[in-house]
Length: 460
Image 1 (cartoon, rainbow, N blue to C red):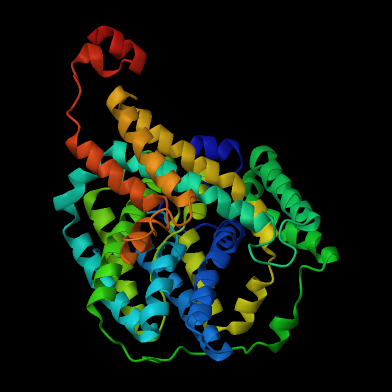
Image 2 (cartoon, rainbow, N blue to C red; image 1 turned 90 degrees about the vertical axis):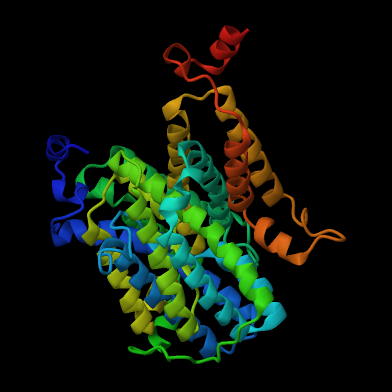
């Protein structure tokens, strides 16, 4: 956003620049809306792994605590790269991610949590190596591939928002009228503020929408402060609370998963940078982002935590409001760290009902999808591009929507674990393969910008 445009709209232009310190009145809502949009996504994978591994209440609290602390650490590294190399230096929010959850659950059930931590350690090392040598494989990720992956990321997030709006999958009142009432009111508030609000109210539309949504949810009995009063004020994570065990099968499985999640990270980073800064990330920036993810994963394995990745819903916020100031994300990281060290603050954030989170974030997922389309059409949507895009999305979305499609007789378990649990992985693999094997099209000046139908007619 141009400085002159920001001034006309009564906004602080520092918010739309990477450097510079915004005022506290601008910083609070723009930072907290990132926290509120992603908080459930950080703690839920930790809670699900705790259930999978049969943790006690104390162990579950500990893994949530570590997830919050490391989410803050990774986000800080992305804003302020360590040694100028570990971290991207770009607008992105990272944290404990659902992307690893299916594979982690499979390893946890079969081998136990200690083996899972050993595989996480190896996965982190693989990620750091991938980031270090990213420049050697960057040719595999042209705009056609990244645009296709970004589109799939956006589409694959829609069911997540709907599940939240309906009350959270597996809850007793899932799909109930109360959940949808609260979710739709929250959505309406966020939509109204984002499109008709001005200044910080517009930029912080999700933050203000969540606040109003929580107030609306109180009469429905969705908000309770009991956990806040019973939680402790301060707690430190333990170093090596579990032994680390290495198992070849588990390590290989998660090493592959890490590379696939890194492809998703590349897509999220590309979407965020293209949508907010009107450029694609450089090799150093992408490599730094991947290395930071690997570095935090290594630390996480020694503290009994989970690995991190980018959050698609926060990418949508970044693309929507174009607020890229690094202190906005640094403020969000500070809240994660504070919540990790202060269980009482963590419990306060846990009070936010799931329908409120769904209603507040569903509007930004479409922005991710459209940004993927924008990258796709940048060089012309030719027949070759349509083929790569269409087939890749068909495989990705199709496999993800058909439960057990890769888990039949004779199919190795690792295939379903890696490729059958997320639309993004099969889509990315197919896009890379098709883009590599399909011959290039005629790129002469008179043909380069033709629409698909015009191109076919000219060839005929």
